[in-house]
Length: 193
View: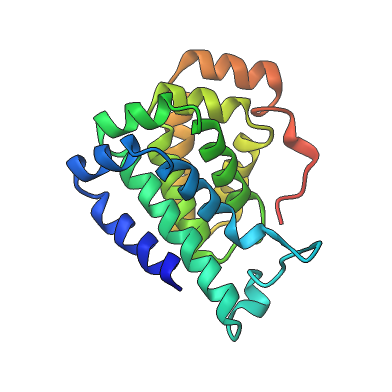
């Protein structure tokens, strides 16, 4: 429960450029946000945690908390990526690939609505940076996940997915990479949940 409150506060505070820059410069913050993004899909007791699935989330406080944690972490990453100084640090940090992979996990699986919506918004902002676009084209199935949300998502998800695809394809070298790798890593045969 404390993690959800902290992530919520971080998501709110990272709306301010100075705070976003401070957050990304603090050692350990980005890896913690990446772990929070993956919270709904962590393994517990050797079995995949299916509590975050929409059908069972309603009455389970653990599932609600992990979905909320992931949504707030995605919101914080999206806020960080929307400020140029912080976005550049985020984009060049060693954990950036972990960020795009964790966001992809939320897009690809049957993530709770709020978490997936925040992940799409974060993708849109992360893809504004050159390093973010490059990391996304190297992730297997990233373009496919965005395209799937464009086709199957609700109106808010479609808008965020379209903006992410526009940001991704604004870089000619990314277009070449997508064409060469078949949709950002050949994830075309994977199911997206």
